Image (cartoon, rainbow, N blue to C red):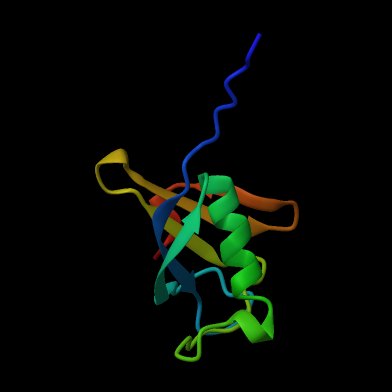
Length: 102
């Protein structure tokens, strides 16, 4: 019997990074960078985003922000499929409501 192995096709995710002016602030989030990330799922998109913005050699030359740290927020815009906000917490990425960006 032949089994069909199904893999999720990779796609481009529209990612926006939000940071506060000072590390550890919980107010004043501003969009600091927008990028397209190639990934198989939202989870792998978040992992790739974290990796790209925490390894000095992988950070885009025009990136004005700091390394991604606890408290930073990432928006994954999937167009008609919705907008998904995640905040980096000590245990990893946690989904949040848009209301946190103020």
